[in-house]
Length: 422
Ligand code: SF4
Image (cartoon, rainbow, N blue to C red; front, side):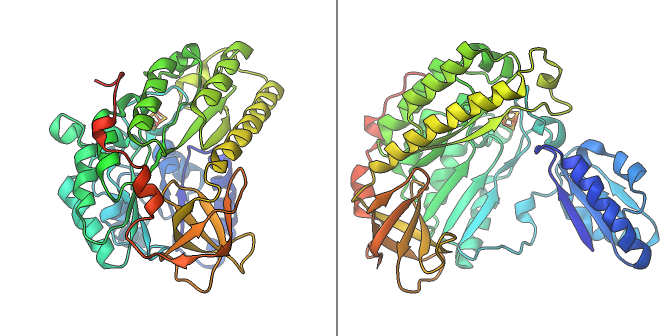
């Protein structure tokens, strides 16, 4: 069986898929018993088009019915089986999984999105937001921990609105607190919170929960109110900056990362300058920067004022060089600090060394004797770069439950203030 798990959020997904399916046709001609399956959100979006363009595909299934694959494969014994549902049947996390890592796991807490950002195709292909029951999530995490997992990353398009469809009110902070009580779980990360739904109760949970890491990914997308409005992001520059302040007041050492789109339709030089000044003001630890490209089935693809490619490229370069300088400056704060890292494996730059990640999500390359993946080491940062840190001494095995530096930096929620929430 060859299974194509597609994602139409990235550019050119369709050309890649139909190109690959073309190669499969020749293989299928000589091996008729070969099963070809197409799943994921391109299948959800294109629905019957795949069958028309590649009739030799055996199974097509959408984003909501991954669990139906065994049944569809049986049905495909007698002819192509095709099923695209509009509602999620079983959460992907609840299915048996072969995980790449023995110490880390991704855990879905919700699927779909109720927002309508004009550049994004997710709501069209993944449907409305559906949250998974808290008890199911906690049970899954307990099982993962029993299997040796020490770090989890909670996944949702907008984790901060988790639970609104279950209880009428967001339950994300409660979920963090429930997971914090799972014995032997060491680290909890999550991605992504939408800034408009990022609330004080989540910040308090981040500050008070032993397991929740001091890192937040808070996608801003643009710094200009005019562009944010055209993107339908539902917050202003000021409101976003207030949220950043809210989290920094509670967790002064928190690392903040973001997503930024350059060259959104109608973006002027003045708008772009506002993105640059926002980046300066926030001082992000890192940023994922994207050049805008229109996606079919999105509102922004129909907007006038598409920015010429060379201007987008030139703005992109200015933004990335500014962010690199800021990342380097932020990383300098870690010089000489003692940090706890979780070992991820041999360094890709130098396999004689190891790589690990701090609670603030900084990548550290360090010298060490052999150390199993998922174990903890304590490092002293001796050199910094924009995208990683180094310890050229010899890392030592963690003694306590948490690195002392981070424990000391963490403040209680009582000191946190919020000017923008509610
Ligand atoms: S919140 Fe995220 S997933 Fe939802 S529409 Fe906006 S960009 Fe897309």
